[in-house]
Length: 254
Picture 1 (cartoon, helix red, strand yellow):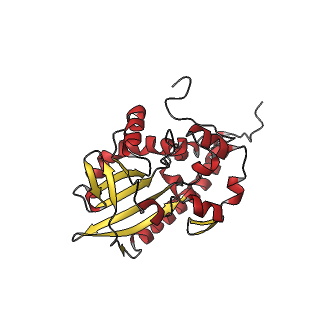
Picture 2: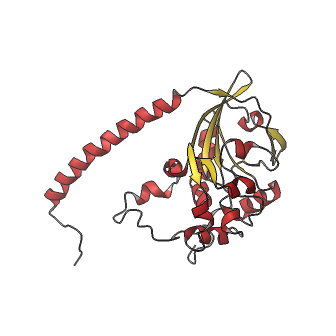
Picture 3: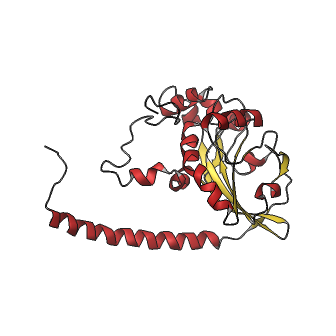
C-alpha cells in the first residue's frame, strides 16, 4: 500500500480546485514579473566585444543576426574543459528546438562560452544541436557579465555572482560531492569547473546601439531548464538525490 494520502475522486477534485486557485495566482504574479522585467532601464554597451562564430569574427551587434532582440545563454564550457557542463547541456536540450520560433519572432538566441570555437563546434556536433554558439575566448564578455572568474579572483576567495558576493572557499574545499562529480565530467578539477557559472542575459539593438536589458543567474535560470516544469508536475516532483541526470547520449537506454 502507498504511504501517500489517498482519497475519493470527489476529495481529489476539491483539493485540485483549491490548488488551481493558487496556480492561477502564481500565473498572474508571473505575468506581472514579466512586465517588470520589460520595464527595467536599458544600459548602453559601449565596450567592443569580439566573438568567434561559425561565420567568422563577430561583434555583439552581429549576434543579433538582423533581429532587434538577443537572448544569450551563458553556457559553462571553460577553455580547459573537455566537454560542456552536463547541467548546461540539459538546459540546451530544452532550448535547442525553440530557437527557430524565437528567430521568427524578432529574437535571436545564442549560447556563449569561453572555450575556443573548435571545442564548441565538436561538442555541438556530438550533441546534435544546431543553435548558434559563439566563443568569447580572449574577450572580457564573460567576466563583465559575472559568469567567469580568474584564478586570481578565485584565490582571493570572494567573487560577485547573482548580484551578491560569493565565497569561493567552501566550493574549492569540496573534495567530493556533486561539484567534484561535475568537474570530473568536464575533465577538470573543482577549481577549474567553478571558474565558470551559468546564467542568461538579454540585449536590445536600437538604432545601431546595443543595450543590456536583463540577466539572471543560479536558480534564476530554473525556468529555462525544460525538464523541471515537467518534473514539478510529476507525482514525486524533482526527487533529486545526487547527480541524477547525464548528457543525453550517456544514458544506457538513450
